[in-house]
Image (cartoon, rainbow, N blue to C red; front, side, top):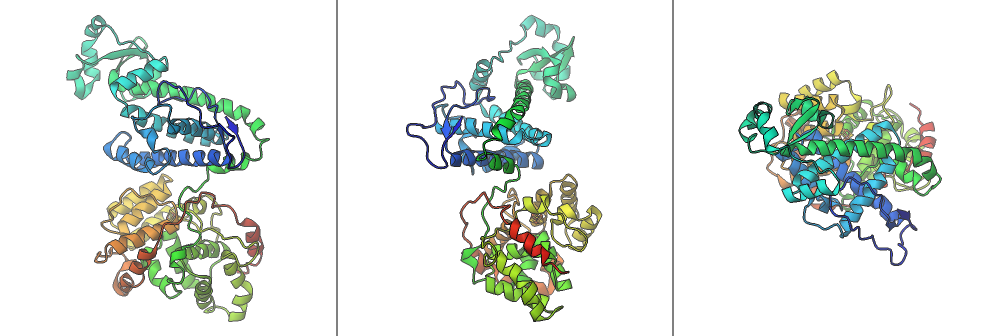
Length: 514
Ligand code: SF4
């Protein structure tokens, strides 16, 4: 693969017609296309979205179940690689080339450490399994042939000799053993079937029913891809001389892939400082509720908290003037106005691009909040699912009136390290009757938008039985949400949003006094 200039492809260098015999592949031959730097990045991001969708569906549902398939289809359809999960496109179309190229780009990005390799391998295998199982019998057979995986079924004589054992190993499907086709393979090629006691074993061979052939393919693909990742990793130092690709590749695994929430232009002017309190009870994610409550309690937030919360508020549409008013009102309950103006207003103007290098800073994504700058003593920033002691978190959920079922689910995902999924269940628990059970939470501002969307579509919605939405706080139902949601427009996709701001941050951190 050649990388051309940033945006312009050389003349006559359309993506090459592959001539491949099957749209499904285990990526043995590297692509020969020339792509621009922009395409290189775009294809990588699109495949990453597909792999994240696969991962997310695998965490939430049993692989191969109806819910799993539905969620994968729904999420992959939103990407530019939507066609790769269909079975009706030819190998000469552009999607085939993009599938091919994007796989190899991610190999480069994910061969850099054992953890990254493991993650990439698992998701690619799951993607392959999903795609292969969608193919019809004829295309499956063709795939096996093209990849020289032409296993021959055992003879009828041999089958009759071991039929009783085959029926015993088939469990509930024992009645079909007589008519099923079986393949005899070394047992090491189907360890998952052996582990699940799903196959009859004899003299080092496993008798695999035709429907379970996917296990053999997965074993082959795993071996091939593991070896290729190891080889790519050894070749990587040569690539590191290319300073155009290196920063992009090394940042890819931490990349936020969702919408850009740098500021909700359509809401600016509509959100006032006075509305924040009621909005926080209704639509803020736990991380921002926590910051809001800490600020109300202490009339102060330390630097990390001010950054995380200030940018979030900017992202929901709080203008600079309103932000200054909001922070000033709260901070001056514990300090005089002069001190606030000298020490804190710079920070706020900086977030809005009015100081320092005047960049339009972006609200932090969940990934960034979870992965970087863990809170220390006295800090209130971070993600409660990641940074709060598990027992304390469970206690807080119970105090909020979250049902036992939801609390158990949230705690399970929290303990397993799936913080954003735990957050999604928190969202479901506090938005009863939510219609999109499969929405993922990737960004605090997305949580806010989803919540606003929920309430705008359900003006009569009964608010959940949590302190945040009961008693005197109930009045918040009628205040800003419908107005906000009607005006919220999706902003453009922006995938380069996360780590742009730290130079000036350091300078501001030095100003931290508390
Ligand atoms: Fe906030 Fe994201 Fe954590 Fe939810 S998962 S609490 S939105 S950082």
